[in-house]
Length: 555
Image (tube, helix red, strand yellow):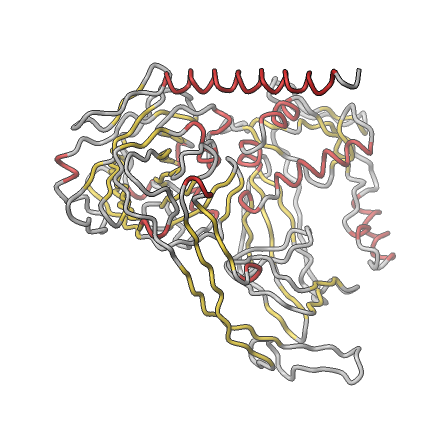
């Protein structure tokens, strides 16, 4: 019997390979033919598309005006397809796009028609790679330069020029630390807004030579309508910001005449400073300053180098070599953060570089921006909100199927103060007398349908005791998985309080929490409970009161 197993495996592998080849052959046969000039797009019955890139004889002026002759001489791509909210239908607003290139740059331009006046557009973010950009109106594209249908580069911008660039791997692993050199400008016209983007070929990696094909996807978001349109059909579950992840569904881009791939070396100068306070060691170390950055006890000037090495198709055409990779574009702070009994954080042994923005969500990672070091301690004064709608939309399909019918038991017995081992026991008891004098238990759907927008939101929070039908151990494991999805950086926004700030949010679509980063200062919370609508599940079922039984919830 032992001799039969290898043969069985060989037979199974052969059949798998044969099936793969058959599928690949069918897929190739269904691919739309290359457009013949002056046409720039062809489609098949399934909606798959082939795009022809137009060569320009002179470099475009990237000014957002779309006044070069190519925009009038070459027909635009206009037949975009809704992904959300009405999957497969025509968009409610017209979009015209052009794909071009010359010997130096890859260009994409678009004219985004909009029936609403500019004051109705959602465009309020200018920071590069800020999460809020994807929640603005925007237009952009993804290119799969090796046409492996797994990896690509993403570029998009909102009407005021706030931009995002990402590298994508394995249809879902995005790297926002990738910040290439590229140019974008936007403009306005009577009836909408325009955008021009230029990506130097030196900023991306690709296969040299003629006859190359790429993958390309284009997207426009009209956020006031929650409308997301793409160049090719995508399932509803890929609506929203994750649509670019489905690289295998992208259109095919042909007509490119690519320059030889260059051998690039990036040099990034930076400095490292360190200031230390440690009153436990003998002798004690004191930085003698109020801010870590005001007294620089130790500083070193360094250069971070990154080299891109290119070869041919037969010897792995694209390899990257990083020197000091742990410091290149890193966002995680590599030092040690220790929470003390009074709620403050002690920062010791820093050995990394802080870049960009971020926050702390109790996951062991410390993210840059908005921090203040004072006498060796870290202060933030922050608050976090998580978007349950985007969290649900970005769930893998298998998890989404699971949570669609899942219910959770919520209770007020969850004890905020009790989670801190050093908390004052008297204050804990006072808290319990007020907050938990009457035990409430209610079963809520894990996926709630918003009564106004109809959107589905994944909502948990730490009042969840366990999931209905699961034991405590299984509930805890599943809770951790789902909560991690909800609190992913791309689904969250952080606010740093200032005097006179007021924040209003919709608890029917968000989770929120305060960050315990205020040290010895007293934090005052005034809470008012307002009766609202009863949560409704996807199947129309409403939340159910378990304890106390005499409580009635109005429909």
